[in-house]
Image (cartoon, rainbow, N blue to C red; front, side, top):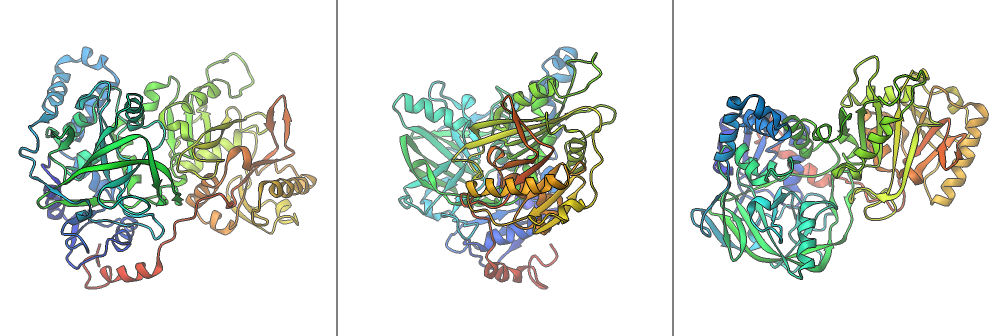
Length: 608
């Protein structure tokens, strides 16, 4: 649909989806502050005409609303849905061959187009420092590319159709990077580029990498799509754009002819440098750790290039819209791969990876009168072994029985679980395992634990709709706040260390148990600010599941261990901030006040 990003911007402006800022804006914190505010307010995309320190323009909030995102792909959206459905269910073609002929032709027309070198690309060589260095959060380690398309090829099967295009953050400056000659690449475990790097290292070779920035919006979305096996990201980009992905090779590096900027370079075996900190999607800084360093070969830009960027932070942010787009376009790929699994929902408010809600099936023993999770546990293990879902910490899973439920109605789903879960039987831990690289609640980088909370059968309890009197009467609790049916947030003292926490929680659970087993309140959240946790469902989900490690932070009223199984009468999750947690993202108030002028009467964003 669009040949380049400039065409996209003009189309958005024509239809009232974009405004321009002609005044010079500082890429250090100011541009990011404007983007965050526009996203919060459901505002338009914004084109920064004058970026301090760079001759290039920048655009933000392109995907700021679902309406605008679907508008970008309005001409080819339905065709792409059909092609992906065909990949998921090849029998559709056999059943309706004439109907599927058009899908095949669409795919053929979207095949990538190779041209010699830079021929027809309008790219010219520049210096890395010519790119707008957008610095998002006060304590970020430098400027980062937040909407990159990172391209690498399989060393054993070179070529574009076996390549990987992923969105891995790129640190442009700061730390120990040699200016204009090195950038940092951060990618999590199980990513495609990691497989390529491992193969290159085994061969004793550097991995050639190209970073594309900008181009048609379809290329950006392609970098984050969880595509069916065998469907190339570049082919998908062509399908969604309605125009073939054009590329060439220069000095052995792949170069997108459609991108606004291209950075080429090499990752050498076992060579790393400190990368970070970076404000990330859990709402905290991911800290400084050694990650691969890319030696920059050459950098290119279109003559009138536009630099697209977003800001990552506590959800919801622009990447929330990416998730919604992906779900609508592909459906739930997990249900195609895992028989019996009907829904899996990664909860955005909890930072996506920490918390999963799932609906499965319970068909093992239909002849038995007693209903309990059985097949659900098999499905839970399958879910926690599936792709990026394996990085989750908490999985709440159930099966529909007498009424339909949805994982996307998060409050109702959690209430359904809490009404039915047998806390003495239905809590299942996995310890010393992998979690999200960006989650610092665990025991180390990528290290932590998981817990499955499975519920099935008859309703076991009526949930409290106010704070149970027993909690108000407990002298170990300094403050309590009602969150939702069956859930109460409580405060005691600040966290010091796990040894002390164990003693305090033992005293707390003993004191509560003397008064009650809390039959109507199966979940207590121990936190630093109970009023904040109870203020909204989003606050409750964020605090509870980003600040706790199941194996270390789970306690219970009348807890016990029997044959290595742990259970209790009421669950307590310690979601207090711990010393090893990453710092929270906090906006710079002075910067927020400075950018307020753009939103005031007479400013370019006054009616956004």
